[in-house]
Image (cartoon, rainbow over all chains, first blue to last red; front, side, top):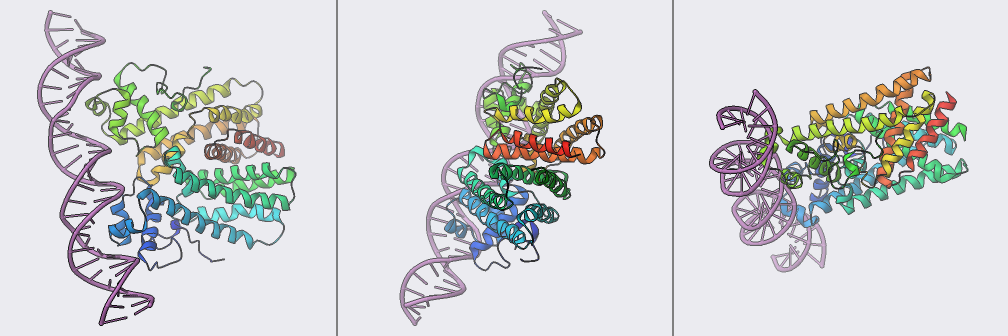
Length: 205
Length: 205
DNA sequence: GATCAATTAGACAAGTCTGTCTTGTTTATA
DNA sequence: TATAAACAAGACAGACTTGTCTAATTGATC
């Protein structure tokens, strides 16, 4: 896996979205939008600000995306894909049984939390801001959660555990809790709090 | 304790903020703003929309609050106070040792999650939307978290546990995780997932 | 070299946003 | 009853919003 996370949060220069200097205008826009949405919120980031950061023309943005809403959805999808690639990539490198991999989740999370530009999970933040007001956002968030849930269930089956679904739900609570607690307190070590809780849970199964 | 929660989320009519039919214009504005901020987001709720819902005049709003930012801060403070009164009030009624009270947290949470108008935690949502962009919001969120932390530590000392601070952190992760998971999946039963995890944690101490 | 898509630059429309101000009315209280 | 605070109604300013449109320019491909 790459040594540095490739999330939008990790690079204040903003060239972080996919994989370094974006050449075409579309990527430049996505990169700038990712950075601004994640750091200042979706509604708070205006089209003109995004364009000014991207250094592109307005007509170009509306050539690639039919509306701001579509841009938001595209950014969330791309951001999610980048994140999952990084996250699951790290976990795939973990040696040992599925149980070890499940616990390693929280070490990878801590690395994420430790990034100076960590802003929380874009999907949690997006649902917090829009919730019922934007179907595309909800769909993107649901998809992201589904990916995570699938991975967790696969690990749980491999351990194996009796109630795979419940184990996945348990880890979902721990992951979300660690993210939010770390974001609010600006303290990456909440990942370790969640990890030792996860260890206790697995031992008690 | 009152039989019905008094949170802004619980009453679509919007007369829920503090304690039923608000008489003065200030309360009407707070009530309308609470409802709209919580259900549609802070940036998405315009002053005119709030005024139209509150049935008050614009000059009245700016007579009581010097800006929208101040209104947001006031709403968060009031919303937090109402929530804590309801939450800790419920828990104070729980009979038995501190350990039982700690676990009852998740039953009270489930009741909250089960409200049809449950929109997640206003503070989590506010930090997600503003984060670094609004000091008053962060202060209100920090204060809310501090209240919860104090309560958790008091219970942990009463149990008693060895590391009071770590137990409080553990419960903070569980509570935040349950809130976010329940909000995203629209499934109140995540409270019980967190509860059984908490039980395992306390038993393993 | 010609053609077509991508892009730039910016004016512009039409609406929304917060916040101010004026004028007059209600309400509570001393 | 007199006085002051609270409130209503709404015009208005000025800035900002998303999105459209025109016109000129670049770049790649046939």
